[in-house]
Image (cartoon, rainbow, N blue to C red; front, side, top):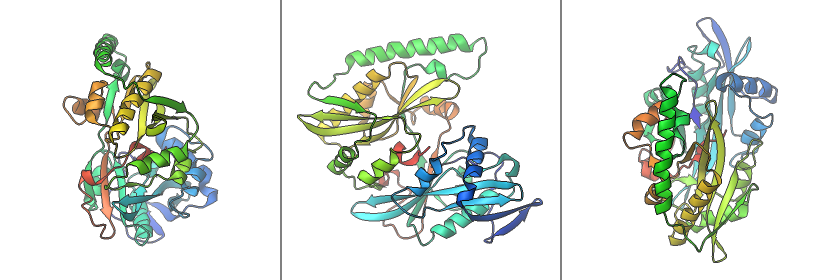
Length: 383
């Protein structure tokens, strides 16, 4: 749920109302209608460089099991749709208490209309809509939009750090100068040597088997969720959630399930993405159970070994779910982006995101404490 409206977007507040004019640009903020579908897809392509699947909007917003009316707002100019602000409701729990939560998703503003107040106007309309529908709002903002949410009074929760296993880090070095080719070769050969040592020293569990499936075993995943439900704020992972979340038109990942003595003990949801021009990134986007017991930790070890064995040529393997023990990740050669010097490189190689939250009612816990959140990559990264 990244806000990526880009540089030059307006960060000030805007009054309520349908018609607005700024710098001689007239626009109307209104709810999305089905006739906007193709215009929104075109705007997505303009902002991100990739046009989404024709069924993307229907799946992501029309089939969301958390709400029948998720809320999408567009900014319409005489030339067409210039901005869109979708919302992403989630069924979440904190302890035994349900919490109605909405995430802010990909606020997209056409480059020709940035600085016209459209981002602010869409924000105001969205928060007005959510005022009596949600207890809590959150988003993941990049360096451009983070200061805006801070200005608007949102609480910073923390940076969305991750664990990375750099199997071919040379592929991430930008440019093609005379020095980059030997630098790539040196980085990759050093990493391969280090990881070879790590792999030899790690001890895989011998009493855990792992199966891989491209289908969605929603019942097994939901059962593993119930095996260890956290007290912190998290998405309720029932069968409906997994059927929807992993049933999108662009889903191309796999589910790995670890079994010990005939019982499922852990699972990973794994997706492969192309980053930049050609580098391959494997993402472990969900890990179950959220509170692992001894068998679950053994299952995580077996799952890591199987995923790494299935993707020896991936440039990077990433995991943002902190429920997998850090010592286990270190044994398998993962490094944490929150520690120097990787934190410095992380800010330059990637686009680090910071989580922000805004309570609309008394939710009963400190939303600024990252220990109160359990928001995995699968929850926030929806396209």
